[in-house]
Amino acid sequence: MKLIGRVREIQKIDKLMNSTQSEFLAVYGRRRVGKTFLIRDYFNNDFDFYATGLAKGNTKQQLTNFTIFINNYFAKTHAVPATWLEAFNMLIQELENKKSLSKKVIFIDEMPWMDTKKSDFMMGLEFFWNSWASAKNDILLIVCGSAASWMLNNLIKNTGGLYNRVTERIKLEPFDLQETKHYFAQKNIVLDHYQIIQLYMVMGGIPYYLDQVEAGKSAMQNIEDLCFRNDGKLRTEFTYIFSSLFREAEKHELILKTLFSKGGALTRDELVKYTQIPTGGTMTKTLNELEESGFITKLPKFGLKTAKSVYCISDFYTLFYFRFIDKAGKYEPNIWLNNIDNPAFRTWSGLAFEQICFAHVPQIKRALNIGGVSSNTYSWQTKGDDEKKGSQIDLVIERRDQVINLFEIKFSINEFVISKDYDAKLRQKIQAFKEATGTRKTIFLTMLTTFGVKPNEYSTSSIQNELTMDDLFL
Image (cartoon, rainbow, N blue to C red; front, side):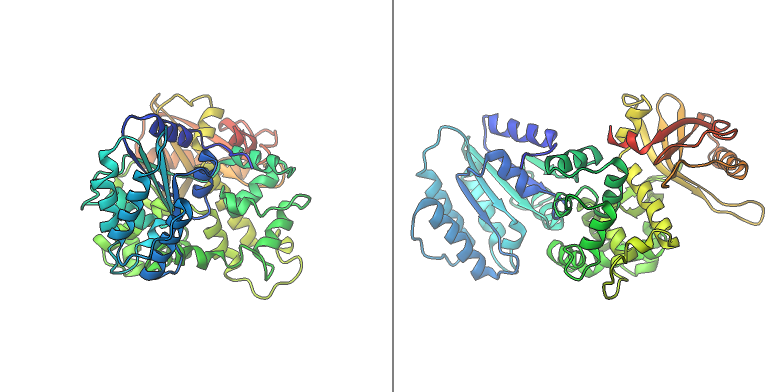
């Protein structure tokens, strides 16, 4: 299959291949996002050495596995070494004997699995890079791993022998909607934008999940088959991705479950209060790992300092799992199709569509013809009291040109109708925002809906801009 998107990532690898020194590339990101596929596709599976870790292997098994790769690549019969120092020295000797007119590419996949408890793996890796590879000018070492916590703490933020040794990093992100559309087209899956958005609300832009979608079935049928049937590939995915990503994954899972149960967005102080995870290093480390792995996003509140930023779940599958899959009992035919008119479905679909919009701010800016205008993105809400109601703005884009776009985001199956009462509600939101923030900037209320706003006497009274789901595919 042809590689979709990944333009910036390819440019980075091009630069490393053309440099006049040895390079050390770390590739990380959420599990199933396509890290291995990117590297394999770029190099057409042609490496000077390749190895991958074993998911549950102990130190002896990892060393045996690594030795098998060395023997297969170099047609040798080395005995399994006792330490990683010996293993990496063995690799150095074989690479020294290999002639190449271009950079020698060494790709070690799922490296975090190799670093078993009390092994000398990091010492061996330091030896390989510091004593040999970095002193040459023709080595490209690529290491890859889904365990973002390990990749960050042991490589990118290493304070020991590999401090500042990683020369480039790639955090691979999920596909956006346009890339998802191209992915389906390449597989001859014909779906309109509404169907694609329904799938994206469940799977996000994770290539492995999208690859499970079958042609000739609607989004609802695919979701039912993949998420609710007893043999559905996404029915048990949640437990697997956490056990493979994080050591001591209980804290990570607790934070996500707490965010979900408390409405989807909490400050750091609120998370400490509800989870009882100690403030300081433990909480900071866990939040950073979840953020770097693509499960949560830290979003500043408009007009407040970073300390008051809120954390929200940004992984679509995780949101869907907590809302529906985790609670699903024995499979019954049409279990998902029968949920369409359920209040839980309407609540989830509204929140998931809002999350899609947050993930596509660059596309929204292009649709508003402000793609080149510097801006910041926020959430905003104010709590009510005895005198006035609380208010919430789905998305705030504060622009450098002294304009603030306030977004009202609505997911519906038809054109959205603005009634007299709803128009009054929109006006109240704008006024509440102005009073609470004290802003003097121009306010543009922007409607972002699936199929647009139905024209009537209220459809233009407060609204300056109108976007539809099609604009998210720009």
